Structure formats: C-alpha cells, structure tokens
Image (tube, rainbow, N blue to C red; front, top):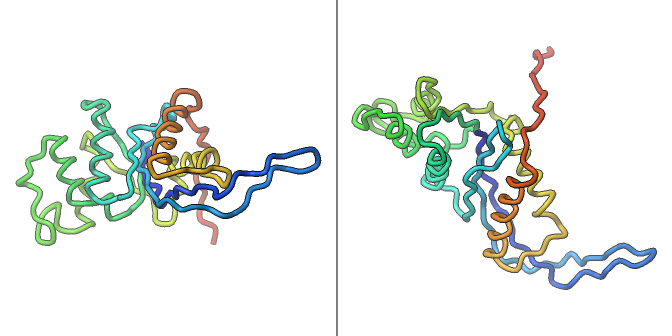
Length: 207
C-alpha cells in the first residue's frame, strides 16, 4: 500500500458561467471564484491492483485521522500482511499508530513503554523502528526525505488533480466537493485502476 494525505483541496465555484466556444473562438472562463472552504483526502493505493483503498475525505489530518485510515485499510482483510509505503510525517510515526499496530499484532500494550520516557514509545526514532519491524503483520516503509515522488499515491494524486481538481472544475460547496471526490475514487477503481509500470530502479550517486 502506498499511503499519504492530499491537503488543502479547495472547493472553488466559478462566479460566472463560461462563455461557450464558437467557430474561431475557444471556450472562455473568467478567473473569479467563490471560495467555499477546503477539505483533505487520506488515501492508500494498492500497488498490485492500482485500486484506491479506503479513501477518507475530511478537513483534518491529525494523528487520529491517519490511524483511522490505516484501520480502515486493514479492515479490508484483517488477517493479511500489510506493507505501507509513506513519508516521514510526524503523524506517520505516532504513539497512536504504535498502539494500533501492537494491538493488531498481539503485542502487549504494557511492553511499549511511555512516550518521552522509555521503551518503544520513547522517541520518534524508537517508534519508527518499531513500525518498520519486518516481523510484524503490519509494517511501514518510509521514503527518504524530499523523495515523496517515490510513493505511487503521489502519482495518483496528480491524476486526480488533472481529471477532477482542475481550473475547469466548479464546486458549489464542501459537500459537493466531497461527493465528487468519493465518486471519482469509485469510478477510478471500477474502470481505470491498473498497476503502474514502475521502471525506476535507482542509480549510483555521481560525484
């Protein structure tokens, strides 16, 4: 699973209708909008199928929001092995996420220590090491800093922006935007989803 958040998605409504195209003249749109606010999207992409799993549309991306999304993904197949690829955002290495993984993997909560003091929970570094543990049924692989483009969900966010959240789009409210985001995700899964042909294999550092 490739996972991340897309934040600050604006519900912009065109203030006036576009002028339709006619022979010798393209369609014309004024660049004046009515702003209805913003929302966000937390989503995972199944690398094997290309489908978007458990997309969650809401304005916040707090620790509890991210853990809820991971829980929704895992609930699709509660006994499966999951490997999540994601960046190094604080909420991706949180105390709540450690507790969730421990619970799912049968690790006693009283063995985790205390945040800021001891054990697995002590620091972000110790939490990250726990979450990366390949012996767990739920594992996390973190992309290097400034390399989020290695995460395939970012490619899908670009597709989403091109197809739906583009200058031609007009959203009458946050609810309208949320509905169309959910509808697009469903449409994509039904008709467009397929594995990316991922050919990048890295190259040695040139000095």
